[in-house]
Amino acid sequence: MKIIAPLILTVSLLLTGPALAQEQGGAVSGIDIKAMDTSVRPQDDFYNYVNGTWIKETEMPADKSRYSMFSVLSDRTQEQLQAIIQDASKKDAAKGTNEQKLGDMYNSFLDVERIEELGYQPVKATLNGIAGISDKTELATRFALLERDGVAGPFGFYVYPDAKSPGIYGLWMYQSGLTMPDRDYYLKTEEKYQDYRKEFVQYATDLLGLVDYPNPGEAAQRILALETEIATRHLTRVESRDAEKNYNKRSAQEVKALMNEFPWDAYAQAVGLGSADELIVRNYAYFEKFGELYRETDLQTWKDYLAFQALDHYADSLSSAFENRHFQFHSTTLNGVPENEPRWKRAVSATSGVLGEVLGQEYVKHHFSPKAKKRMETLVANLMKAYGESIQELEWMSDETKEKALAKLAAFKPKIGYPDKWRDYSGLTIEAGDLIGNFNRSARFEHEYNLQKIGQPVDPVDWGMTPQTVNAYYSPTRNEIVFPAAILQPPFFNMDADDAVNYGAIGGVIGHEIG
Image 1 (tube, rainbow, N blue to C red):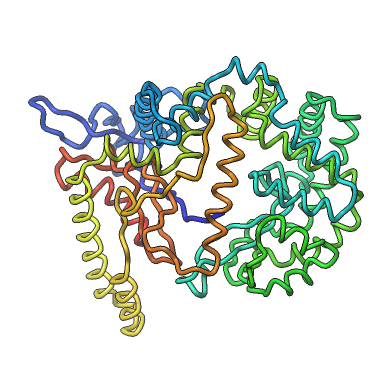
Image 2 (cartoon, rainbow, N blue to C red):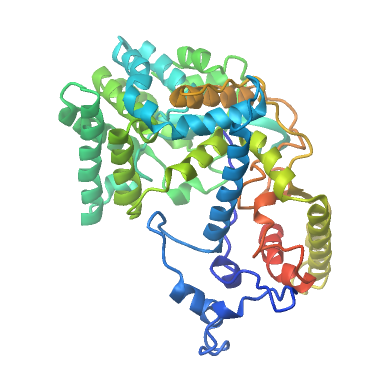
């Protein structure tokens, strides 16, 4: 329900290379000499001079498609989170407490015996609801009910500040509906894309077959045909990055007219958009053509599609037959990853996804000190000051532009470590032994949380990432730079290191965000 600008670094020292090293006597040098390849001249290849030995000696884990210091730090953070969750799960916590929720969510993912015993029983009601659709109005309502449970349909919504009125939360509407990464996988004619489509049909056939779906192979062919039609209407990745083309504010009645033969009123009521007066339509051309696609596609094909979308959504949380098939297609076929992550890591990720700031609050208590926050605030302030001085010295920039750039810089809002106010999760119920139910309740909880923001003033203390996220971001609508606690660890940030080391490491992250 929200979009953020994730950190993508190109600074070679940060992407792969060395962690902070401990010298004899206990002083932190800031550079891991053992990771360097000093046989390479730095003026010839600085990247390999700094990182060469680390690259040669570090083995790519079988559960990764790429590996860097971000990966190393993410793995370390996962271990830190696991310890916190396990500690919570050992307590005889009262129902509704944060400790109970953390422990039961984590253990519901680890309870393989229970998951195997249930098979696909946890999604039978969802599949029966889809099978019972009798007309196109009921179909639109089912789109909405699945959206509330987090199951993707042919379009979706998120709540985020209005790009042209950034002080207010807007309701954004966007194209969706593809199982594979983008339209190229459906439309390009190269052999590898043809192979992906064959694998897709087999994957859909297998998932549907696991629930005894009638004629699963024929249904899979219909699903591919429908997703291909959706793909032909999708904007390309380049077109989707055009901010102006992807900002189309319309009244609810105008959106209804835009969607043409789609039963908008039934959908909007069921999904909870009844009070939304305006929507911001991304990918406008897609929605101009969607009503026609909705009308021309027969009801059975839409039901096949929704049944498959539901199974694909839940498969990695069902019994091993579903989980393994989901991994084979999404991770191995599409991304070349040969092995799944250990189950405990996936349990940690699931718990963090469902109970983000609950776990984040505990993470900060254990792994991020007030001293670290204060030092990071000083680093950011100093770099912003230096950036301002650099702007003032630019010969090619006009005085008028400098004035605006400096005004924007002065208005930057750094957020360090964790939110000033924590979210309240008291309305979310987590049950032991009910993994799919926990995911569904979480999805509805997030859905309602976001819907109540629509048209309201933007909350200045709201964060787009949890403290335990190894990343950082800049939000253009809020003009804020955000550095979660988890990225503020070695090799990016070290309380024991010299300032020069931190300016070179986390300073690169800060510069990336403010630049």
